[in-house]
Image 1: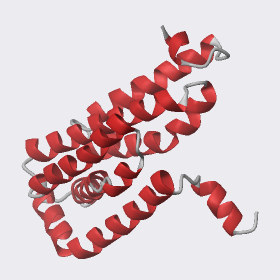
Image 2: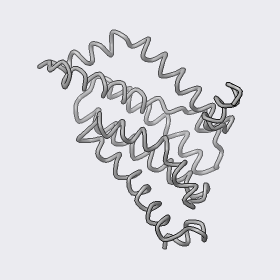
Image 3: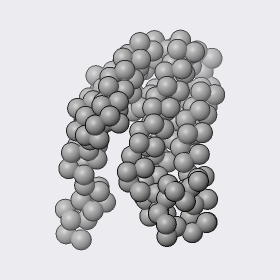
Image 4: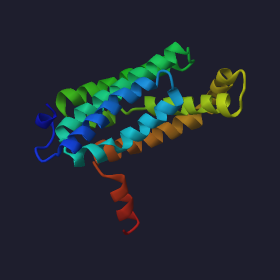
Amino acid sequence: MFQRIVAASSSPLEVAAIGLIVAAKFGLPLLIIPFPFAAGWANFVLDGIDGDLLIPLGLPDAIYQPVDKLSDWVTYVAIVIVAYRNEWPTRRLMLGLFLFRSVGQTGFLLTGNELLLAFFPNFLEPLFLVTASILAWERVIRHLPDWQARGFATLDRYRWLIGTVIVVYKLQDEYFTHVANIDRSEFFERLLGG
């Protein structure tokens, strides 16, 4: 079955690696529900390097893109579940950001137009990672009994700073990824004269 999906030149070991990475892309987001901080960050790292692994192993870009967007959607669903299950004060905002990004993802999957992903940026995942990190800090590092209330008070206190950083980060990310289609490492190498 995999031989029909991957490049004909892919070895059985490469096909197995592709299968494991794709399984991780769909399985890891499900771990966000019980382990928001650890699984959220692990998923973020995997999502950042998966294309650099899968495409050289022989998964065509035409297959990789929909797989990536569908696994991203699983991540977003898990994030919304965490927000609602734990009654986070930001849950409605997170649901709205999920629906906003889903418009771009659906449009991309139907048309293949990457600009739709840039026009509907993923603000949800960075907000979730910041939230999960603040909550983990309050609970695990500071050992506060009211860690959730304090975490959301911190998030509220710095909401404009956090929001601005998320928007600036995601707009440059969406530009590099979906408009300019430039690899960041190559961009900085050229910028620094390498």
